[in-house]
Length: 290
Length: 272
Image (tube, rainbow over all chains, first blue to last red; front, side, top):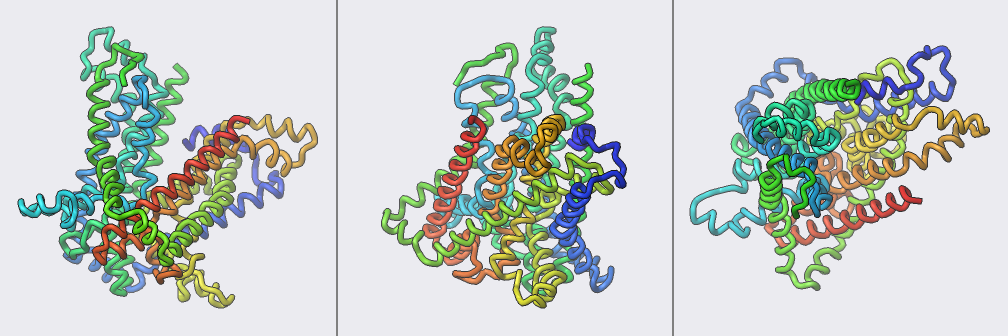
């Protein structure tokens, strides 16, 4: 987005001395708001984490419970992102390549998890699979546990990240239309050949963008996971839940150390996002020139 | 459900079927089960749960703070979007990239960072204490936390619309004698309003349901700083599943009605 925006910015030539006062004030107040609202919290995380030096910082991160939490977070991300990736491609495919009745309803349903509170997302799975839930007795008979165990955490993470990939792909694929796929079919390509050689290269960067956003949310989800986790240390704690426990135990330095690990991951995700976004723009730019 | 425009392209049945199956299993059936669960309560019992003073206080707090945060973002977000689209200045690229930080940062991290910042001993909290007021553990603190988590919505919905408005439109207004404020108020604002409302609605909806960033800074005192999602958690901890479900249904219904209203308003503005 950034490259297309900067090319349309009308003041790209102006040097700061030629700026009207109003413009300077607007830029200054934007920086103030940005610094106060966004940068200051970042600074606080890092400064609190390093309060007692690097020794305590690293020992908080390498503690067994923290490592177990990290492992669980990786499991939740590793299962939910690929599943929602496949779903996102399928959903975007049927929404963007065909016309059918009820399409706008389907798009609304895909977006639904965004407008549901994460706590409700956790609650509905407790009602389904909890000890007193619809399938509770059945699961109990077979000695299967979903709630307060890893499957519940994966389910809750899946729910909150359902729309991410689909949402990025739908506008992109609608914009691209169906001509290239039709041409491939007329030249004798099979369905899968058409998908792998024509569609996938076209949507590659949009797909990566969606996956990046999906990963960020899956890694950081708190409310939904908190409901179904049961907070068993070393077993059902993800990294964000581990941060909460440490914080509530007044172990602030450790809490902020683990938090700064998550912060670094978030900054890395922003970099990836920026990169895939610029690739989408370049691709769009190229296809517009052709 | 079958009127394909492009019969050459395969996979309609497969992808639509998979999409519907996946959504049903993961989203629709569990959500439906929640609504079904409330039928265990009679109508008067349901009313009794949701008109409990503690629930009403939480309802008011959740929707009030989310509204305040969406309004703050309506102003700050417009400013940031404007500056990012219209001007080049030192650090613009960094600002552009970092705007999305609240979406990438886990909400619990945001929660503890903001609490440390606004608590009476924190960087900004200290300063507020000197002036004689508190930020953390008050509705003000909750609003600020929600402002942080929902900051990108208004900026990101306004940016593409702003970039599409040709500069000539404002120049024409200026030639006709409008001052900068007038050309903003009468030329730009009407064009931006639909997108602004979308951003506002997204921020508001997210704010109502937000949990992770709020519980640290809220203090969670019943009747005072207890948000609705937290009340659901409290009920669940007490094994009061029907109570939790009733509040969940209330939240969903109220959010849905508000979003519907905003949607209607948006349509009226878009088609004068």
